[in-house]
Amino acid sequence: MARNTLMSTAARLVETVLFIENEAMDRERLASMTGLDDKSVDKALKELDEVYQEKGHGLRLKENSDGSIEFSPCSDLYDLLRSTYGRKVDRRLTRAAMETLSIVAYSQPITRKEIDNIRGVASDSIVRLLREREYIKVVGRKDVQGHPCLYGTSRKFLYEFGLKSISDLPRLSAIDRMRFDRDDEEEQGELFDDGRHEK
Image (tube, rainbow, N blue to C red; front, side, top):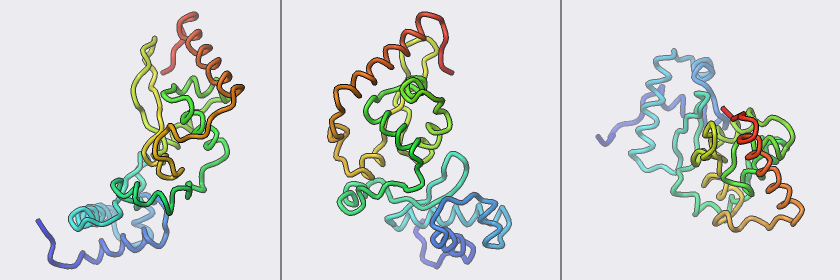
């Protein structure tokens, strides 16, 4: 049903706090900063989401896997925004997260264990972070024992790095390419030779 009236004060208040803070916020923090109770926050978020969708706004409300809420550009605008904001990458990404993201970009589809082998350290938390930020996503499962998840880059990754497709990535040196291929082979050997598998 189309809306002909202003949003409720609660919805406008939540909208304003999300805009001013300019970062993902959980419901508890929203309640604290607006003075609303939990039920009112949920109702305000629902109303706000409906209004943004009905009116065709350029932004949408996005709920992350940890339950936090933030504004995000509508996916259909990514191509139009790429020329202006294509290289405005999330500055909160650490060096380790950027390294992991580059591994996924060049070696996709790739398992978390294969990422670990290339980096030489466990990458569970970083892979989870990159999924929450929507830079990578599960694109399938590897046809080996345990059927571990395969990760690939997302449309958001292309848009924020100013790429039309993954084929636009700069070419790797021969040494880097050999390193990636070798680690992939080692991972397969582990899965088949000694029966271990990724969960």
